[in-house]
Structure formats: C-alpha cells, structure tokens
Image 1 (cartoon, rainbow, N blue to C red):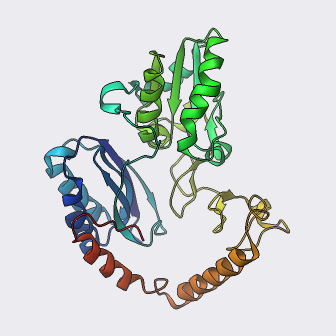
Image 2: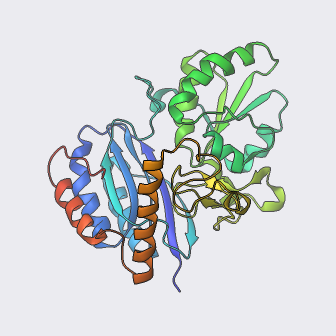
Length: 326
C-alpha cells in the first residue's frame, strides 16, 4: 500500500491580491486528489495537505513556481490512513489568527534556531522556554521545562504575554526567551509580538516541533510525549507516525483510552472534558452526525455527498472574493 504524504507548509509574504490564487490552487488540489486545507491572506499562505507523493509534488511545484512562494519550505510525514476528507482553499484575514493589528513577522520575528541547536539553547539557565500552543496541545506533549501558558486559543496569547510573561521576566534573572509551536508559524507572530513589547532577545524553533522530531534522533531528544496535529491522526509520535490518542468529535480535543472508558464518554457526542458544556440538543445532533458518518464508512462512501461538495467549492472559489469555508 502506498504511503500517504502529509505536508505542512507556510510562508509569510506580502500578497497584494491573494484572492486570485484561490481558484487555481483549489482546482489543482481537486485534479490531483490532494486533500487538506490551505489558507490564503494578504500576509501569506498556511496549511496542511495530504496525498500521493507525485500529487503533493505537483501542488508544491506549482506553488514554488509563483514568484511570491519561491523557496517555500515544508515539513512532511507519512501515514497509512487519509488524514483529511476534503480539499479546501480559504481566504482569511490572517493565516494564523492572533487578532492583533500590525504584527509583521517579516520585520520583527525572533531569531530562528535550527533543530540541531535547540537542545543547547533550551539547556541554558538564562533561557525561559515557552510553549505557544493551546493547553490541550501542551498536555499531550512538550519540551522538558517548558511553560504552558494555559490558553484555549492563540487569540489569548497576547494577554498571556502582557499579564503573565512580561511581569515574570521582570521578576527573574532570565534574559532570553525561547518559543516553539507545532510547525513554526505561531512562533513567527508570538516572537514578533514579544519583541514589539520591548523584549529583544527572543528565539524560536525553526520548522517547529515537527521539524525537530524529523531531524533529532529520539535518543538525543528533549521532547516528552506526543505532538498534537490538526488532522485525523490527532497526534504523532517521535517517529512522526500516528500516536496513541483519539479525538472527541464534539469538542475536538485529544482523548485517551482511559477517557473513552469514562461514564461521560459518548462516541461522537461528549467526553470527560466537554460533557458538562454541551446541551442535550447538541448531543442529539452530534449523535446523528456520528451515525451518518459510521454508515458512510461502512458503505465506503464519503460522508454527505462529498464529491458534490467538492464541485460546489470549486465553483464558489471561481467567484472573485468568495470564501470556500463550508
């Protein structure tokens, strides 16, 4: 069986007319059966796609042939199970949403640190190590000694910096900050934001956790646990293979086998973390969705007319200024 390539990519670049790229990019993905989601904004491109080796290369080659995306970097892993069901190209205000106007990683991002040099940096006692991801991502796995900002979304990170990180730095003898995230993109903005708050010596892991796991042998690694990924694999281990976690289809958070034995776990409808946050109406709707998805899998068909959805998305993407977020 041919392995499926999972390719994460992003690039901050000024796009004067990013809308024009949506339709040809979606058409290319559909033509080559490449699944996943790509985000386009005036500040660049971001996303993860999956497919056969030759088909992924077609998309990457097309992107790199565009002057704006020349030299586009990407990170890859493999899986035996398709991690995405649909092909989508969305138009967004930001390719990673911090919600702060005027942040420009092209001008003020922190200093890149190659994976080979990361262990040395974070072993420095003068370095404060900060995980910029959400709390549920940190709980699945992180670097030894890293601070968990305890955020639910990246939009909360600026408040964490102002209310907790900067005061903490003033009260410690730490004079350097090192930040990391899954693929590197959130750190582009988080380090830029920290520098704009007046803290200059800021570093971030180039290529993120995924690049670190790809390049650093497990016996030399300072990574602990698994890495949460935003696709149906849920997590990957140090070999970048599917990890041990499943996912609650109600709140989308990672769950363990022990969680699934809880009285609060209802497949597709709730888990121990969200059971008291979901209404009975929502649970009923989620259970029906789970039933339809199960029936579709048994029939070997896409859920809810997926092929028709793809054609509709392609038509919508052809309209100037449209957004294929469905």
